[in-house]
Length: 242
Ligand code: PGA
Image (cartoon, rainbow, N blue to C red; front, side, top):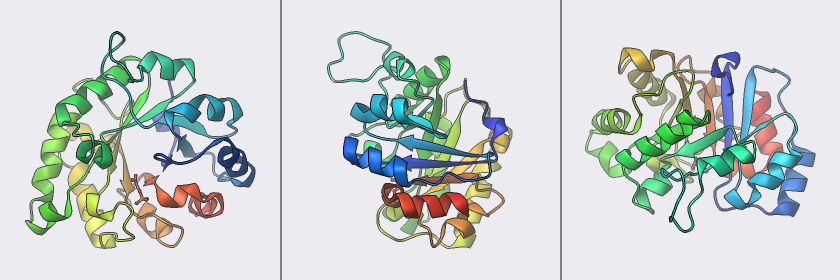
């Protein structure tokens, strides 16, 4: 199992439903990994490409974008944690807002999936975040609290779990909260309870080369979960270098 405390920060590329073999070859050829070995780089391709990228990886870790809460059995189309382990996958994004919104995943399911990963030595990257409507209603903290309470399993701790704060309205839109708002929200998550104090907490939502340094430089931000900009190896490399 990866020792999270060996790293100062995490930069996770969420490729979503993008990429093919040619893209992966070009990406790896053009990727410049950070000189600082305490920065952990994780690439999360589609499930179909996990095997290929695992065999071709060099200097980064591999993550999945989803896993079944079931160990095995009659669950057509699902991906087991066992199959992820077979492919040397060390991380898995869980509860991304696209899964919560499009695929109707609930906190309880996210909790079970995270528990399954932890039990098998994989690191869940549990995503939480408010929608624009919730932000406008002024209930961001309440929403985050409910997500934290219900989607983080009791077996989770700072050594086996990462939290990613991703305001839903900032994902893929080019919009980001102000730097003060990111700072305040991350502090809120960290201080939410004693257990969360030592967790690595990533920010996600329109992180790009032009804003990554400022965001990830905040004391309570331990790295980033990056969608669109992670599909551009040159831009992603700039983010890693900062
Ligand atoms: P974005 O996506 O960087 O394109 O906003 C982030 C994410 O969905 O994790």
